[in-house]
Length: 303
Image (tube, rainbow, N blue to C red; front, side):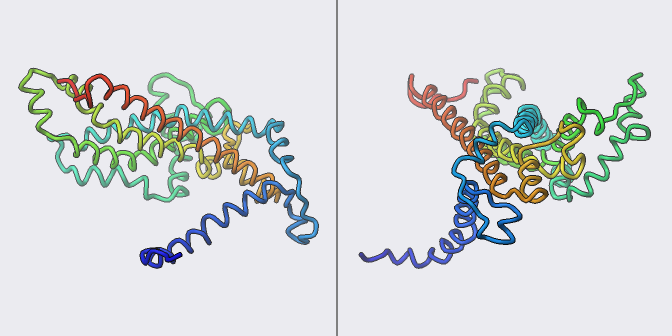
């Protein structure tokens, strides 16, 4: 069989992908069926194949369910909040009356490229129970001090607030690109027909931003399921496990307790969860597009 000459051009890239992506993933999958731990690390002969025992142990582990619950809480609350803040910021910096658009975009994108450790130092000061700025502002409304990072009820909302602030800039840039791809002539035609700003937003902007919404929602969901750095730096999963995420649990099992086989099983359960929800989101989007196009071809936004 004669190979296409183009194959030899992409072969080096494919070889690197296989070596640094597919091979480690396959090795991690294999580890999830073993009891690889610190003893096996010292002597590979201690490594045993345990089949699905790691997965069975996982589903009976109360700590895993707590981490899953915390992660879903973070995704369900932090994800939509992040998307809404990103969209609002994109609409503001993309508005024709906004001056210095480039400057504002740069400033709002700044938290994305700031190291999390520096961000954590600032936010720990903001959340400080006695002298923090946030409690000082709340005191002006007669609200007593809140132990943001020490109270199990407030620790996850505090993490969500910081994560949204740090990451919304990336989605904002994606939304700005989506907004700039909408033809200005649609807004001009809608204005001539008497449509106000609210009608233009709901009947032109939102429908034409739907593909961008899907991309941002999926990317945000994937990123939020991998919640690790924020609780690792701010709370170490506490207090009382209220900010323990699946990724942090995986890290603790793998690199604190050296249960690498068990940690690999956690990683693949997380992968399966994210993959399922991503496929579900893409499927729902296809069904909606098909339903809109079915009656009389592709529908146009109504003015």
